[in-house]
Length: 101
Image (cartoon, rainbow, N blue to C red; front, side):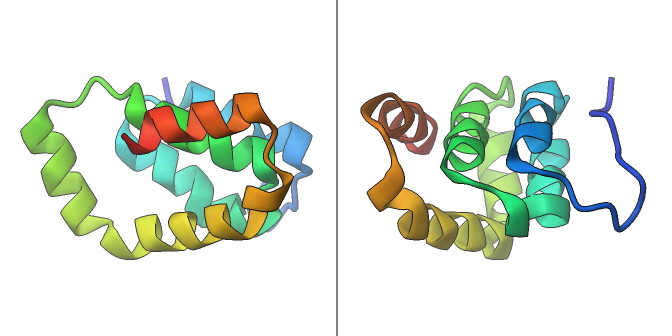
């Protein structure tokens, strides 16, 4: 199932955002959450997004193709990660590193 979609243009709090990456049924849905709500992502949301990217059931080829297609959005997520890194607790760092690896 696709993640819950809030009303268009509705700003969500980081707490409201956090279940959305977990509910995403595909890599595309997951990055769609970032595309729609990335400006409101906090450090927990960023770590959750990376963790879910790492847990994807996509094959290596599907993942490589997807990452190539979504390079710009992944770069934005990486830059966002760099901005929130000073606020990351150890658990969040581990979650993000798992996904990035």
